[in-house]
Length: 301
Image (cartoon, rainbow, N blue to C red; front, side):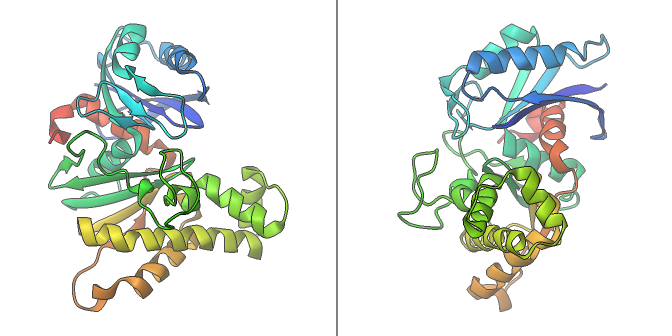
């Protein structure tokens, strides 16, 4: 039976019909009204209404770009969306008239890659999603790591510059401020000495522009720096890099690997994880949310 997966990000809300093999059969999306929680519910409701079928699973999966409580009921806060102590699960269930399985968006993407993507065959996976912000997920022995209060594996809020830029989470120097898609555009603007749009930056990267490549190198270097700390803690078999910026492929992976290999001391004396690009692209959140809705207990602690 097909299942709806919903991915609520800081920039876009996507709803997809996903089969049990993880294939997205239909997809609809709209911009996220990130400053208006009620409007977000309205957009989700409108998108879901386009998929009404009696054969769909009655439970939908929702991936949200937010810090969630341990019960997956409430959003503590979200760095890029105006959610604060917001009862997201009940609000969606009331609006949709369906059961909702709620998960952090990066956790959902990590679960998708573990169960249907680049992590298949591995028992220990760490994922970083590089989009509007930087999300993270850890899967260990077939279980998502959620932490004691529910907000574990927020890898994008690893500090890489003490006393650095203020992050939306309230901490200074988080990797999200230096290695997200938003940060990539800021790096490019700084290097070029003018404002750059994401579309223009993509065009410059595709054209091989040296300044755009240098901006991407900065992002990769900060990610590699963060991985030095994260690998020491998590010790995963594989690291999956996803999100919109991961479309750069080896152009992004090369500076990540270079910084990690130059900095990680135990490199020559112990096994280290492979670093690969996610295989499900921007659909990972939708696929993971749907997979969790079909069998939420598989991912439970």
